[in-house]
Length: 82
Image 1 (spheres, rainbow, N blue to C red):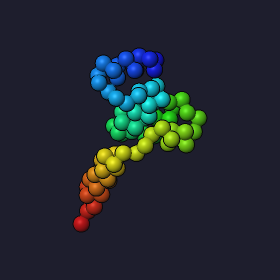
Image 2 (cartoon, one colour):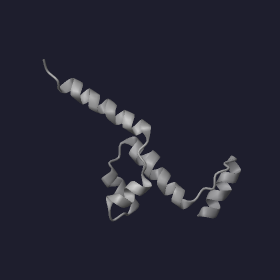
Image 3 (cartoon, helix red, strand yellow):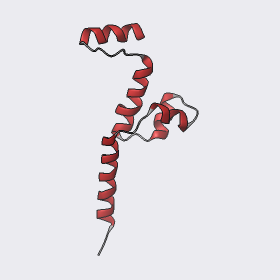
Image 4 (cartoon, rainbow, N blue to C red):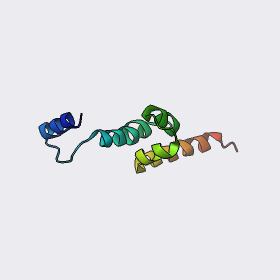
């Protein structure tokens, strides 16, 4: 699989060395967590036995923090009654 990823990278002009391991990190961080999938679900998808393993693969991005804070702001705004 890594050989295929190298071919794809070469064809696309990507200088970074791609690997299955990097793909797992990207999947966990960008595709799932970045789109609101709970870390517990991501953990199961990756076949991890503990959340600690998943946390190693899934880095929280600043954009995710911003989205989560915006959701919280909306909940608090709608929930406050004067």
